Amino acid sequence: MTQRKLAIVTGASSGIGLELAKLAAQDGYDLIVAADTPLVDASRALQGLGAEVTGVETDLSTFGGVERLLEAAAGRPVDALLANAGHGLGRAFLEQEPAEWRHVVDTNVTGTVYLVQKVAQQMVARNQGRILITGSIAGHIAGAFQAVYNGTKAFIDSFADALGNELKETAVTVTCLKPGATDTEFFERADLKDTKVGTMAKDDPADVARTGYDAMMRGERSVVHGLMNKMQVATAKVVGGGAAAEMHRKQAEPGTAEKVDKSKV
Image 1 (cartoon, helix red, strand yellow):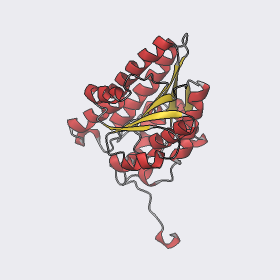
Image 2 (cartoon, rainbow, N blue to C red):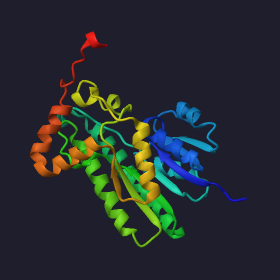
Image 3 (cartoon, rainbow, N blue to C red):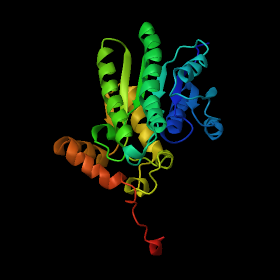
């Protein structure tokens, strides 16, 4: 009997990560799903899809947390890694506690890079595997009032491109998914609910996940979800960092939340 394929999905408790896990399960992968919050609801949502699901609650901002996740594979080769874990952080940089912004850096950059390295080494040894890393269009935009978060995504977007190039002579592919504002718990956890970006209409995480998953299966280098997000990236490139930061400020500065006309609700 042929052993089923195995996928690791991080940040899988909700949102894009949970939707990616569903797609992988439907595509014949067994799953190891990981998050730094309880996975009760996620595990329930993944039942009945024909996959063996192992949930790991762990802090992926630490090497120890990443090692704990990898141990859950119990020696099975990882056929697909969907590295989606990430944290946001809004408000003015000078008002943020060092422990807060360091956690964002350690989760989005340090933990992600360590996990990708460990899994990619195994994949290259077998000359087989797919990696999807969730970056962001934020990586293309100087993020006033999200300075650290956008900086980490700039790193991830660049890192994914670089690693993909390094592995181009192998059968291991690296794809970077670049969403824009998506309807997830991100904005509440990042303290962005009183901002324009926190209150505006957002993309459906299921649609975003499908865009990324399909691009991974095709072995594409990167993919931006949605026409409006592609336009934001193009505009940021044209206007430059200073103007892009001012544009971002109007979206992310505290107190810019869109006013809801209650008479139309």
